[in-house]
Amino acid sequence: MSSANGHYNVGGVYLPRPFKVRRLGHFGFNVEKLPEGREFYGDLLGFTTSDTLDFSRMPWYPKDTDLGDPRGYFMRYGTDHHAFVLFPKKVMDHRADRKFAPEVTINQITWQCGSLKEITDAHTYFQEQQVRVQRVGRDMPGSNWHVYVYDPDGHTNEFYYGIEQIGWNRLSKPRDMYYRGFQEKPPLPQMSEAAEVAEAEAKGIAVLSGHSPQDGLPANYDVEGVMLPRPFKITKIGPVCLFVDDVERAETFYTERVGFVRSEEARYRGARCAPQPRALSKRIAADAGLAGEQHLHVVWCRTRKLFPTPRGRRVPQIARCHLCRPDPARALSRDRLLGLCSGSRRALHPALLLHGAGRVGRPGAATIDAPSDHERLARGIGAALGHLCRPGVPGPARLIEKT
Image (cartoon, rainbow, N blue to C red):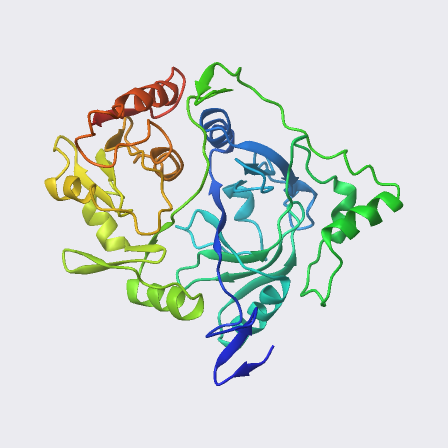
């Protein structure tokens, strides 16, 4: 890795750092209630388990302590091996090589880069910038080359290149191919994925013997011409919202070290909220009631803002006005849930907002008053909420206001 006047050659373009984030890759939680989490994200929202990882086989796992299900679950909605991971928090708290702050339940936030060289150069860059590095190498399962670092608040950020793709037969890579995992910075160049498959076959490995998921629900819903087990399908993840102690410090990390550009900022009671990904101070969160026991009304709008209001009050007019503003990135669906609150004393889980809110309903409702030639948003939302609120689901959601 070399730089010219403080800039790096990244794919033929000079940049301030030796890598460039292309997109949000996958996301993960350390959860206290793993069986309930699997039911929520798997049966309810439709993520497919592509692989599991049994942590009880690890040398650091305590042999004399019952920590419940010791497995981590890799889940997907598309062809990437995993877009979402669920790990048991009790198990993760025992890992000596990965220290999570007590209040941090995010297992990882991952950012896809454009080449393997960017990942190895990023590792050197973060070390030079004195950013705390967790590890570098290649994960199995998933096959993604990576470097993991911590942000100032202890959130784990993974920068990765290449991830296993799962196709029509829904089979993941067999465990016998995990010998291609790396626990250290890999030397360059490396063999291609096609060469890895050819090598495995030459070794006598059954490359089609990987994990095969089992569907638990019948396909009873017609979703735009395709029969599916749910009246909606998740097609994208993001954006990310973080609670941080110091917004300025977090903004410096994500802009100067990672390369995000601040698109706008908001203020709440004199304190800043800076989206890149959105950083919300813990004081603001407490003032807004996100950390309390009150019910919240949440608005999802085209500017990617979340507007919380106390229970019993209507969505403020300023939030409604923002719904008419276009989404500059064109990255979100045109469908929106305008008001959704939790039916329990827990705040509505962000996954329903991030994964569900922008993906249910009918297209064409970009304003409060939908054009006469467009279908109302309530038709699709009603079907989705009927699924989300079916008997036996903890903390059911309910629609409180709709177009």
